[in-house]
Image 1 (cartoon, rainbow, N blue to C red):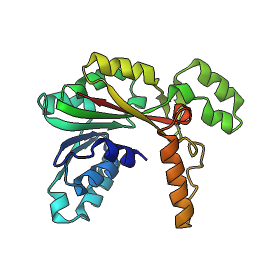
Image 2: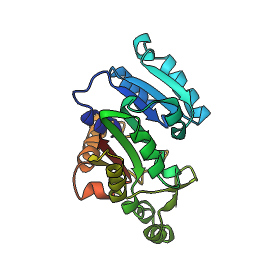
Image 3: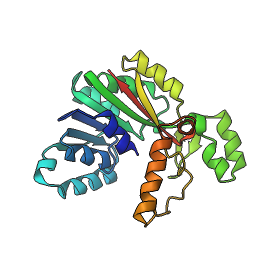
Image 4: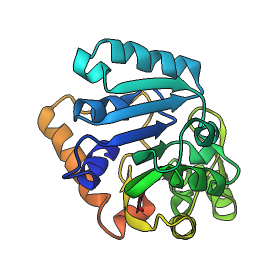
Length: 232
C-alpha cells in the first residue's frame, strides 16, 4: 500500500534524488531505483542492511548504479548531507521508536529541496485500541485510550502519533501536509504468519479494498498506520 500511495504522490517526477531513512531490507529503495530514481538508503540495523545489500546485488547494473546503502540513522543525516540535498525523503517505520518525532522531522525537512516531498509512516495514535480490541485484549485496549505507548509485534515498546500533531509539526518546519493515507485498515490484526491469498483474484480484491479504504473517510481514520505526505 505504501508503495502504491508513494507512486501516486510522485506521479510525473523522474530521476528524483531520494533519501530513505530506516530503509530496512531496501524494499522501497529498490522499487524507486527500478523506477529511475537515485536512492540513498540508511539503516542502523546491520542485519537488515545486509539483506538490502544482498537484494541490491541481484538487481541489473543500471539499478545498482542508482542506489547507495549506508550504515547509520536519521540523526546523522545533517552531518552527512547539506541542506536541500534531496527531492524526496522517506522516513517509514522510524518515528514510533523515537521519544519525540519533532527533531527528526525537522532534521529531514532541512534536507528537502524546494518542491520536495517528505513521506512519513507512523503508528496511528487515534486507532491504537483497535488491534488489541479486535483480539479481545481488553486490558490493552483500555490502556491504549490513555497512552501513546504500545508493544509491537517484535515485542518492543513503541509509540504512536496523531495525524493532527504531525500536521502541526510539518507546518512548523515549512513542509505542510499535502495528503495522508491510512495503511492496514482491514488487515492490521492479521497474524504475522498468515499468508496472503493464493488466488490472484482474491489478492487483487484485498489490495483494492485496502487501497480504497486508505483514501476514504471514515475508514482511513482507524487504520493501523498513517502515511503522511508533506510538500515543501
